Length: 73
Image (tube, rainbow, N blue to C red; front, side, top):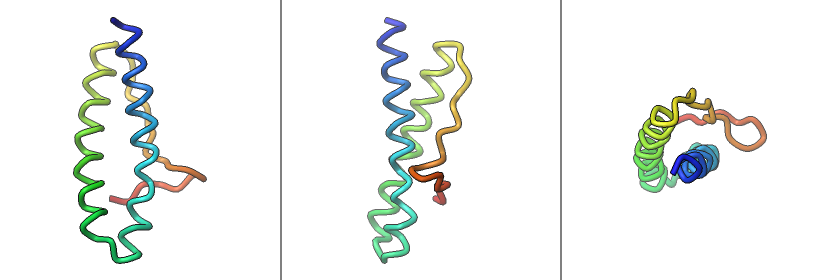
């Protein structure tokens, strides 16, 4: 069970990292899509926190996307 939760937590961390595309979409005029991504990110972060809490581990700061870009939502 804990192994499954750790796997889920790693997946959430990866997914949150990948949301770094939202600022680029917003600057390209894709405001509606960027808003959908922002809402999904909040849900993912809540799940990430729940999993980390259940596992007794610190929540990773994964808000830095590819190439070190910081998420700006």
